[in-house]
Amino acid sequence: MEAAFCSVVPLLPAGPSLQEALAFYTAHMGFEVTWQSETMGGIRRDAVAFNVVKNDNQEWAQNASFSIAVTDLDAIYREYQAVPAKMGPLEVKPWGRREFHVIVPSGVCFQFYEHE
Image (cartoon, rainbow, N blue to C red; front, side, top):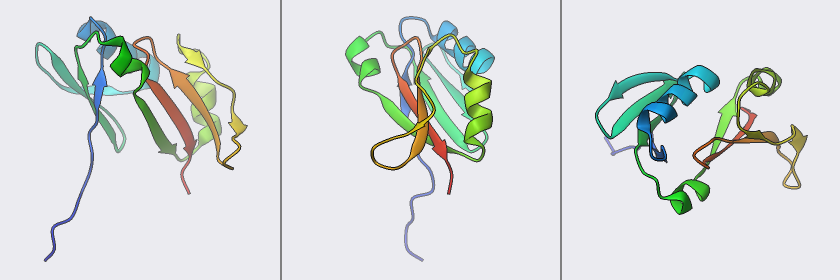
């Protein structure tokens, strides 16, 4: 049997307060905290997981970007309308993919698109 990659769990910079970041992801984006230490915590929503790390390096946060495939893009767009974050329009991008983005308070950008 050949070795295989099974999943990836990226690090998300939390900003200066891990507690505030975890509270944001759970209260506003539907994630649940799966584990937590003093400087890191794991979050998950369905099959998508991240490790959130306390880090106030703004350059790292502002250059972190993740594309997440979802099963009902319109429903997620409606759900996130109330999120206190910068949200882009739901539109077809020049590369042909219909998506929208959310930039959370730490500066991390998430793009959401329809799973094929």
